[in-house]
Amino acid sequence: QVQLVESGGGLVQAGGSLRLSCAASGRTFSTYAMAWFRQVPGKEREFVAAITWSGRSTYYADSVKGRFTISRDNAENTVYLQMNSLKPEDTAVYFCASDADYNPGSRARSWDYWGQGTQVTVSS
Image (cartoon, rainbow, N blue to C red):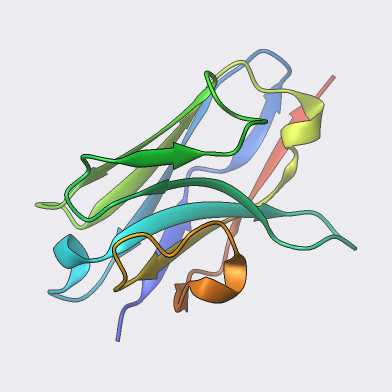
């Protein structure tokens, strides 16, 4: 069982930056792929970024490429999402996810474990 707790959300102006953190419990963190998704009311959960267990491979949605960076610290059981050049359309609840597969992909249903989410609001 893996438990995930997100933090770092908040209100920021367009063009600003935020760094989200996701702290994971369990000794298996270093062997799990990690990802960030986001969701706005009335829409499906949307893939943002993913990172393999070693950190060697990362994947991004086209909408965030060049602006967001996913990273992980296996010694600290934490995954990060650095978000730069934020836009109002980035406003959403951001969720951390984990899975034992090497690369579960961009569909939310493929990921087994989820955090409760953290709100990110970008004002124009």
